[in-house]
Image (cartoon, rainbow, N blue to C red; front, side):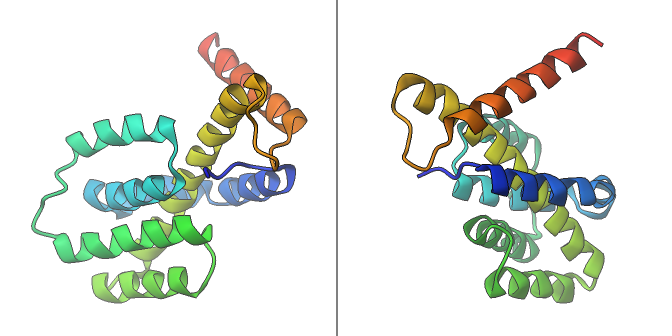
Length: 168
């Protein structure tokens, strides 16, 4: 089952994202492309978002994931997977977070990986919620926990935002 948003989880995740915008912008200067891709691809694999699969495939081609820095990349991959499974909470996530800080010698790398993980989780859930509405609720194949009114309003707001930005 793919993760979808409800009213409550969407509000919580949007607040988390807004609070982390400065850290997300700084993350691109702190982490290498390989480290960012390791976190993002592992998290996307857990969240199973069809939209993310497409752009992750293209991003992985641009980034050399077979570099000599395999030990550190393994930690970043483990962090992304653990973050996705536990929605960013729990002892396993915190333990790997601390291991990244210790192994790289930089707490900023662990914080940057956390910011990138929150952003990727947000993007995956946006995609899953929209696709859940279009392919599930709209076709009568929705899951019991889906909320058609929330998904309809959310999908409308996202598409309205995209069209507004496009025509600016």
